[in-house]
Image (cartoon, rainbow, N blue to C red; front, side, top):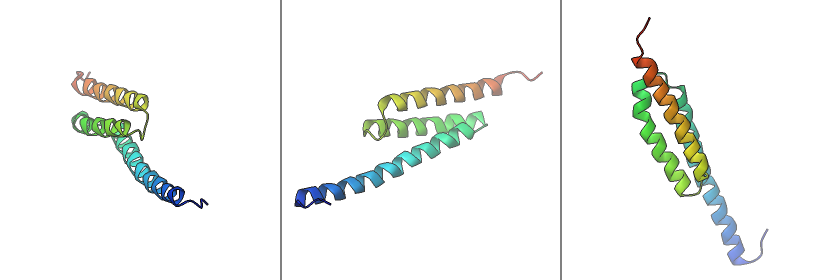
Length: 92
């Protein structure tokens, strides 16, 4: 453990930030999982902007890497578009 007062404070701040970041990253993973599990095109399309906004915030705050956020957003958009195609395709 550190002896210097500023080092002790830094340890406290790092732990507080780690817990804060972990909460928001876990929330994002849950949102992504829920969107991927969604089978209804309308609900998925409604949920997509919320998830994208959350991923953008995490990337902006450096909780996740910007490229990871972009990759997730791209894959989720493809998923939603596939659901839309599936919903509008004529049943045979």
